[in-house]
Amino acid sequence: MPMPLIWLLKAALIYGGLLLTAAIMTLAERKVSAWIQFRHGPNRVGPFGLLQPVADGVKLFFKEEVVPAGANRWMFRIAPALAAIPAMLTVAVIPFGGQIAEVEGRPVYLSVADLDIGVLYVLALAGLGVYGVILGGWSSNSKYSLLGGLRASAQMVSYELSLILAVLAVVAVSGSLDLRAIVAGQAHLASWNVWSQPVAFVLFVICGFAETNRHPFDFAECEPELVGGFHTEYSSMRFALYFLGEYCAMTVMACLTTTLFLGGPSVPFWAGAPWWIGSFAFLLKMSCFLFLFLWVRWTLPRFRFDQLMNLGWKVFLPVALANILVTGLVISLGGGA
Amino acid sequence: MVVVERKELSLAEKLYLPEVLRGLSLTLRRIFEPRVTRQYPEEPLPKDEVTRGQPRLVVNPDATVRCVSCGLCEAACPAYAITIDGHETERFIEREPERFEIDMLRCILCGFCEEACPKEAIFMSDELELADFTRQAHVYDLERLKRPVAALQKRIDYVHGINERWRTSSST
Image (cartoon, rainbow over all chains, first blue to last red; front, side, top):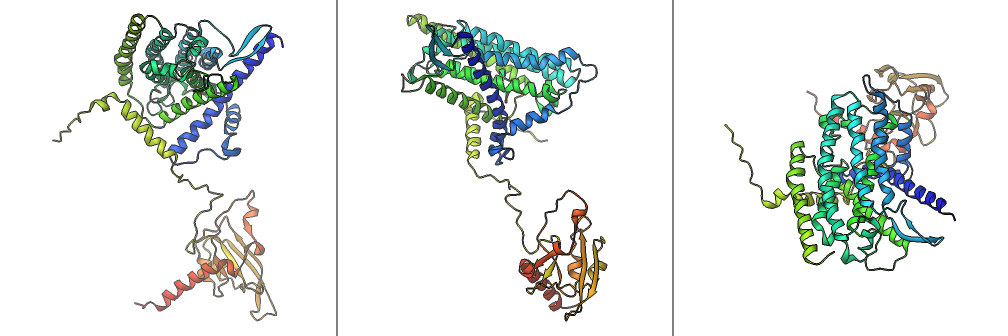
């Protein structure tokens, strides 16, 4: 099989998987919320309601698309794509599994792209995600949308800092910006970064919630105060695109947590596991994190905005900096990573 | 004046994370508790003889209708939902309905027909579901109204009990 064909196949597989996960997440969100509230959740469309995302998608396609008067039409139309595309692009560098084959003397890994600077790429794209939200909020010509967009951007920018610092500690421990190298350094259960970097792990997970605008940090939407936040004025598939972007961002964040802290596709107590078992382990770890996203959403109340900013700048940033300092000291005094 | 004392938070509460974990464990336990939602069409509503559903006509074990088409229920009906045409018969009761229609869209399930009936021929059943595609389909004819005695027995006994209580209670 020629190399370009393999690239295409891998891209189709991973992007199909990502969109499928996002679709399943919309159902899972409703199911988990229902279970926590003693309800059944959607169970009418298909077995266990599994076809609900399809029904939702069809419904949204048939909805009228409204562009509010006074809105900046082009920005209004582009913004949902700007929110969704960075989230989807990020998944390209996630190593879902080890070497799956060898073609023309070159190893084929289960990831779309094999970048030396994978971490940098992910963080750069994560930073772009905020544009979709702020532009969508601004171009809607609605005060609710604008406030939602402003809050979201303020929040994403401030939490991104702590997020990057948490990742930096992991990079320092692993000594590489290559996600595959970071995974390779965590081959055994004892060498998972979550044990050597517990503070960074907690910081990363919490900042991940803030970065993806999930509860308890979902100020971008904040229904009681801002109607729907930045997507108040959106309807039809553009609205769905925002949601797709949000769920893709969640999935990517879960993948990143797995890769950076939980050894990616490494299987505990089984070093020589075949690649497909490794990939299965990866998906399992990722699913646990996705469940955590839902679980937290239906447990915690929302912060107040000033509390959120206090937490971000006065707690997380110092803790992240201290974590970097301690990590650096330990590495330099202990003679390298 | 009411002074609200601000509660001094412990370190664990200020850290927030332990409390978050406590909340998470609470919601996780809820997931495994039984659901309270009734899955309606599969799990029907609880009904008993007090349920006043749609009126139905009693059919005797020998397949004859008790109704003698006297027209009292038609007269008692406040919604004008009942239409009866009768004819004479050789049987002992002398008359029987030829056409007996209840427009279920008009019926308000008040039970006056049941009270009015001198022959214990019409009773409020426990059937409540009413959905169809045309208005005409909601006009129930004689065949659709017929129910065997056994199906209505609980309601019949209940009405007997009510009547008995009225009869034996002292009049003032």
